[in-house]
Image 1 (cartoon, rainbow, N blue to C red):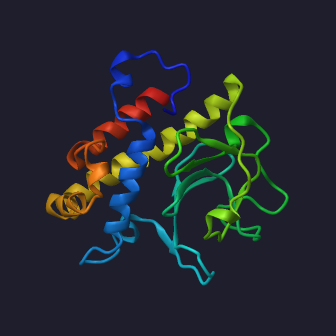
Image 2: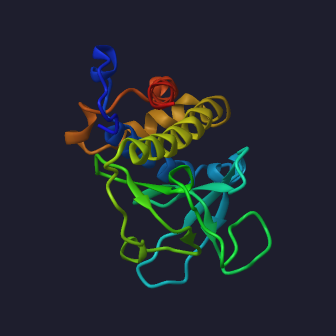
Length: 210
């Protein structure tokens, strides 16, 4: 799990964060095809299409922050990233070409699908980026400060996913998600939580890591 030195017995009985990420991405893949329009765009994400061979569309959502470095949540089908980004431009909410994180709290955090440990990226993520192989090499957190930065990034993503799930339930309807669950590969169904409790699971992840 993503909890470093976690001692809560109750939380240890929760589904792993890696399992929640896998289920969340499964739902997002169905939500972008909703009959009334791309649900991620309707929620507030910016869709960045790809013209790269083998690439995948990414979705970018600015995160509210009181810090001087602006962070964004970036989602692909293979990973999610929380942290500062760059596009090569000096204006806008992204870090400029000569800026970057200078402390642990400003590290970007990469949560790859099907993995159990978040990775720290020491430089702002360069966008657009559409392939897993183009991601910069991340580092597993080791020190208390690095784990604190990793937990903060995962908690920020968990908070967004919890809000998104509540919005999706109210806007897309439970029947839409029930259909997505029914299409899950059989070997995954037993370890995935019911979609109607997913927001609460993300809330508990956020509370545990904050």
